[in-house]
Image 1: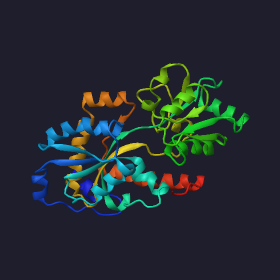
Image 2: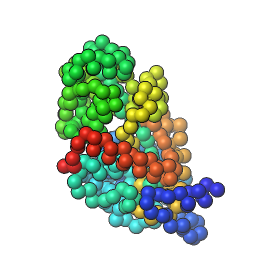
Image 3: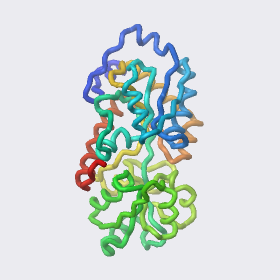
Image 4: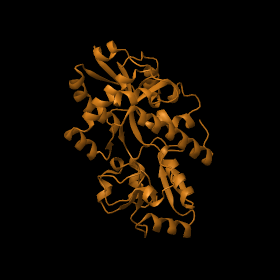
Length: 326
């Protein structure tokens, strides 16, 4: 029954070919290469490197990680797009190259909805709503009330114009009707914005738990919410933004596994099944938990639908903000 549903489920806008019995029985017959669009040390890269030995043991073939993070992940994506759709080449990518860049980059050399077969979302990496402890508020509702009484006096930081962290700040402003000043820290990563938040140079920030780091326990910052539909295990007392604003459109923040378009359904399910089992391993799960991520391992059809929805969401937000591709 699971096989029947998977074959019938639409993956993006193309139909996955039904594999022959021979394909299903012989796969895999050689090593599998996963090309990483994300730099070494990122949570997505760590997740696939933790999972790959367990996947290899279950599949009976080596699973090789090939790191190609150049050009914001586009080099890796193009390499997978051009590979044979036989299950021996896959892509691990953050959501930005596959979703957000569609609206931020003028000439993306691939179309996520056409050129790739989704296999599974590997991990979710939600941002959090963090403010300086100097603000006299302790909840999102109090923050919104304070911001409305002090329009334009709250500065929020991001890693640059048009980035996900910038769009979160602008979208929460639209949702709540407040006005904040955007301070972009272009090409500086999250370390400097976090340091400036702790010293009240900026008043709000939307990093991940991992990028907030040790500052979370210094008393210099306050975490008000998680930008997700559910609470995060690492900070269970912090509400999800959907609890507070059910209509708020959550921006994508994940790492996922994809293959070239046309991957046979049974092979996609086999890879997804072994990935999910690896992510549920106690040691792997504990390590990913310590990084502030949530292991997922959903089905190809579920992941495909999520990507479609994410692309639509980002499209609406970038249009509302007047963000043009550069």
